[in-house]
Image (tube, rainbow, N blue to C red; front, top):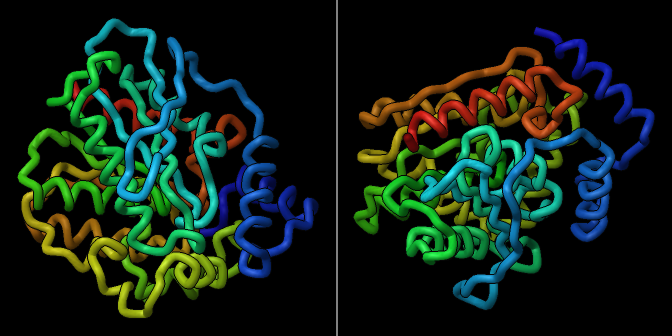
Length: 310
C-alpha cells in the first residue's frame, strides 16, 4: 500500500527542507537536526496539572527525568516513558508533546527518562538507566502521589526497545506491578533481517535502512551485542511478561521485527494486542496534530493505558 496522503505531504515537506540523511551526520549534528524537527511540528499538547524536572541516581551518575502530573485527583497510576531516537538522539524536549498527551489523555503520571546516549555511552548504558528510572518510580517517592501497584512502561522506537527490556528485567526480578508495556514501533532485533528492511529501505522518512545500521553501529559496542536480549529483547525467554500493546506503522523498516516480536510474545503465552496503521511511516506517532492517525494512535494508547491501570 502507498503512503497515506497526509504522509505524502509530510515527505514532500521533508524533501524541500533538504535535511541530510542521518547516516551521513555525526551524532551531535543528528541531535541538532532532530531537535529542530521536533520544534517545527508545533501544535498544542494536552493540558497537564504541572511538570517538574529532576535528577535521579543512575548506575554511573545522575539521570535526568521529567515528571508530568494530570489534572485528575491522585493517587495516580504511573507510566515510565522512554523516548525514541535510536539510542543516539532524542531527549526530554523532543518527546515532550507525546508525554503531555499521554499524561492528559490517560490521567496518568508520566515519568520520562533521559537515559544516556550512544556513542558516548555504548550498550548497555541506556538499558541500565532505563532500569534505574523504572526502579525509582517503583519506589514511589511520596511526593509523586502515585500508586506503585499500578505501573506501566513504554516508549517509541529505541524507547520501545528499552520498555520491552525493562519489562524483562522486572520479570527476572520477580516484580508483578507492571500492568502494560506500550511499545510503539519498537526495535526488537538488531539482526535487522526482516523483509521490511528492503521494502521500506528508502523514501519513507528519516528512518532508512542505512540510518538503522548507523544507529546500531553507534549503540552496540560489539557485533555479539546484537544477540544479547538487553539489546534485542526478541532473543529472551518471553514467558510470564506483562500484557503488551504494540503500535506499528505499515511503511517502516521495523515493521517485520515488530510482527515477529508480537508473534513470539503470543507463542510464549502473553496477552498481546498489535495495531498497525496503514500508510504510516516510522515516527508518525509523534506527528500530531497534522497527521490524523497520529492523533488516533495517541488516543488509542491513552485509552489502553487508562484501561490497564484502572
